[in-house]
Image (cartoon, rainbow, N blue to C red; front, top):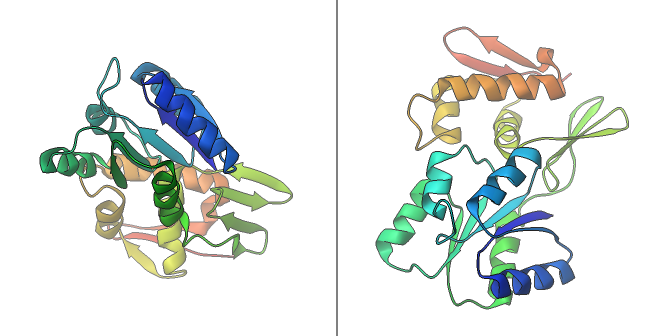
Length: 212
């Protein structure tokens, strides 16, 4: 699992990095928001560990104002209910208050990913690996972004059936109004990976996934 840590406390950053590396994770370190933006723009990660009080842009605004698809856990000393609420509204999947045990962090990460199961066939020449966010096709491994993976998993719940556009918008962008353009972009990106013919557009209704 590829993890990006964004924590400006050098000692804590190093401590988490050493611990998770021993547990088998591949770690990239950042100490401010600018580094984090560059890493997320150029690389794919399975998880983002994000402090709130970081240089250049605080962690809340970082998720609120940037298009971040990577599942995010806040690690922060801010512990009021208002802070926790803002963290989840910003899009985080977990919120861990400092100080915390490293074992607790590992347990939270394991809990987030425990239901993922290995490659899922999605056609005679395709398989989707939800653990690694990879499409296997003709001997190749193609990385898929988290939001596109979420879209594919929704389609896999109802193969051959029409999925209403409003349902997709609600599930993919629950806190983002006017996100139809983003949905169209995700559909386009997913088609490039699994084939245009596998996602049919049902005009003014939604989309249908057709495994072949």
